[in-house]
Image 1: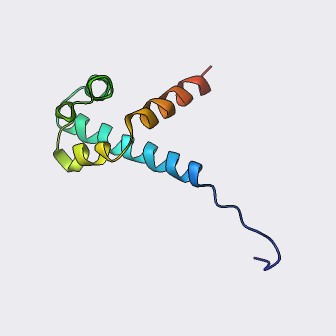
Image 2: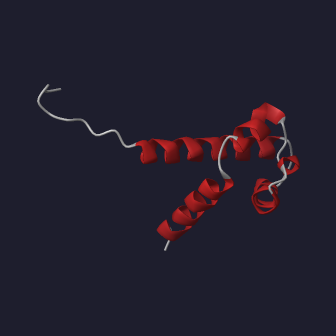
Length: 83
């Protein structure tokens, strides 16, 4: 890499990717425990009650580290990509 070029560090893209990865991990943990991950995550997003998310594989702690509005923003963005 040349010393003369400025590198760009895109915090928003990294933050979004970390949120996506966390959601995947939470989804898989819920699925492994026999829950319907979609229903459980929606319940959490609507109510804010972490009781909707199992503590299995630290899923509850992981999802609570993310702002619920950020999760909704990413889900809506992914939905819009499908069209």
